[in-house]
Length: 371
Image (cartoon, rainbow, N blue to C red; front, side, top):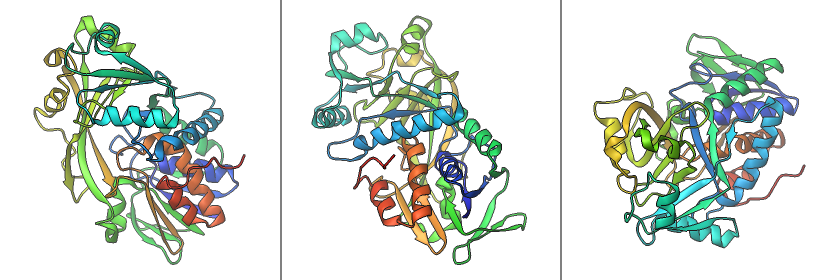
């Protein structure tokens, strides 16, 4: 089968990887370079973790995600995963950290409950008296996005895929499986898979309402010298009070990153305002103090903007249009499932069971695929 994949973020790259392994003829189109730093999955690193709310489903899906990443590392010949575990810090009753702890208990997943004093002693960048408790799980860490993208891109080229960068798609003919590039070239395939992230609404504006685009940003920081060692050894951190915050310590050559779900603005254009504004890094950083101690002493090194699409319930989604399958694996938490999403999408393209794919993407049906 000839398949065109539009978009080389993690979902598109993984879909192309899995389709090629299944023996299909694959053409991958990316509007920028691979990795594309403007893409949602184009930053230095992202979190993988088991923590989700109770009965959410995605926590169970992490088992399949790890299996898919392991398969990918085998093909690439190296792992781009830093398995340092994750830490949650609860500041208020019923906050995100507490929801994650209850879900881990419900699922029987491992974690260590840590008192405030013990947590501050272990991680001195935490501010004493500013949180109720913490807990640490071994099932998590950092995925090195740019290394993953470069690795998959190289693997695809080496194994016979046609990979086109700086090739912007202008139009998709869903009825006939044709893709027109902005430069005027017309490509033909049996199936088209669109994994264009925040740019999908430019190709399918009728999905506006089912998908919403947001512009956000993350900040990279240089910590105080006496805390640098503790930060380098820290787990990834999430569930920080009610700010929807997360922290990735220095990993894979990238620096200390802070991000918060509070720092996002709805937009109708994924390319809107991608240049950081003055003071933006400090505004993101200051959301974290407390429970992060001496927050103003963490110096802003860089600010990176991102564009994401969200569904109303923040779950993955897919739409079938003629010979085209549109997949949105974003909603702010898609990267950790990237390799598994690619395998599932490739399977649906091959066997035509898009209903099963949609159930899996929504975490309504979490079962491991047959070996």
